[in-house]
Amino acid sequence: MMNVFPYDSPATASDVAMDERRLNKVAAQFLQQQQQGRFPGGQLVIRRHGKCVINLACGSARGWRGRGGDVLQVEQHTPFAVFSSGKPMAAIVIALLENRGLLKLDDPLCIHLPELASLGREQITIADVLTHQAGLIMPDLIHDFTLNGDAERLWQKLVSTPPYYPRGTFAYMPIEYGIILDRLCLVLTQQSIAEFATDNLFSPLGLRQMHYGLAEQRLEDIAWNYWLGKNKCMVADMNIADGFEVKNNDMAVFSAKNPAFGMIADASNLAAFYEFLVQRGRTHSGEQLIDASLIDRYTHRQISGWNKSVKTFLSLGHGFMLGSTTPSLFGWWGSQGCFGHPGIFSSLAYADHRTGVSVAIVTNGNKSIGDFFLRFASLAQNIKKSCR
Image (cartoon, rainbow, N blue to C red):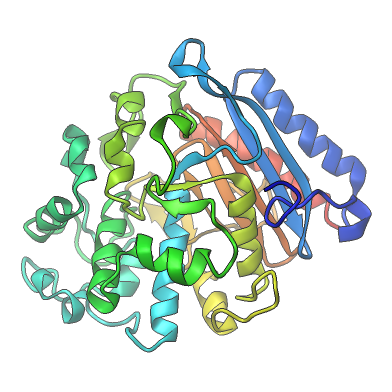
């Protein structure tokens, strides 16, 4: 497996027009974060111009401080649950369906999903879901996390639930995003997003260690997700700290294959996926898999402003969080070309239209939005500085 795409051996910095000294600083900073206990274990992969330039693995996947079962060290191919970092891949599935003429983003959901033609949801569009303006949030799911393991029950619960916010309210949908898009894909293709993405996206890209759900892997081979923060941490009106390690390492997280939170991948596969996007839909072998104009539209700004769920300023494309001139997850300044998505407070995968770099930072330590921001923005800023 090693030395073969996407696990290809790193090229020298000069081969991809990057500054070796600054890249070494990025690598040292990532390793230092792990040594300081900011996260138990993780992976860092950076690609540019079709080549890998950094591929690091460090620390504990499991067994850190006696938690998470038997001791397991992180390697390049160790799979991690990357949670919401899988949301953009679901958006690209929708782009593929749009490319094939099966839908339009301004279609009301109820055209394809007539069960939603009630309770004031008639005007909600596919674009509203992709930009988190649908208002369909079910915060009580936090009290019955096992429900996440049953896709049909989740769908039926959403069908019977009125909007939490009026349509057009900019409010992040942590779970509902995946429920809706998955059902939409199933109706249009007779495949779930997990199945369709594997057949039509991940496999053609040669990314066999990226999927929704466990696939052929065992639960005990997946890196354990650790909570390192306080007992209360509110996101979308849910205290995600409540029973975090029990809930986020349970089979229910993976069995429903919900594209909002069910992705399992390693950093090599994630970075290679973003390389495909920053190359505007062209695969590593040179095939144009999706129209470049769609990639451009999905990865550029559709909305920005104060998000009521996460209580911070966000800029979004269709399914992607975006950088800005001011501090963001993608750097302290000048990250306007960046597009990607975090996974809880532990992982971030993204690319930069301006520099052509694609990055995956995957860890298993979760503490808070503030801690996440400080860890990742600093790394991202130094990565940007390393590009000539």
